[in-house]
Length: 98
Figure (cartoon, rainbow, N blue to C red):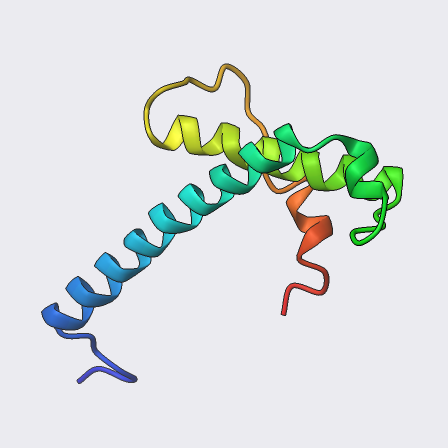
């Protein structure tokens, strides 16, 4: 006898498919934001209505640069030569990790 919830095949299929689709969608959205960040001068982000500090702009752009690189590896259009923690700057954006 098992203890706890034993997933069914349908639950595994639905949850697994949803998780992977969400990952694919999230990476695509990150790439779109990265494209916008690349086209937006730091001075624009530091001025109203955004009012980021220069350090915040650097962190924001670094985080999305890393995730855009991860997306290219995920899609097979680039290779990763050395191990890298892609969360280095992203962790600064997600705060308490709640």
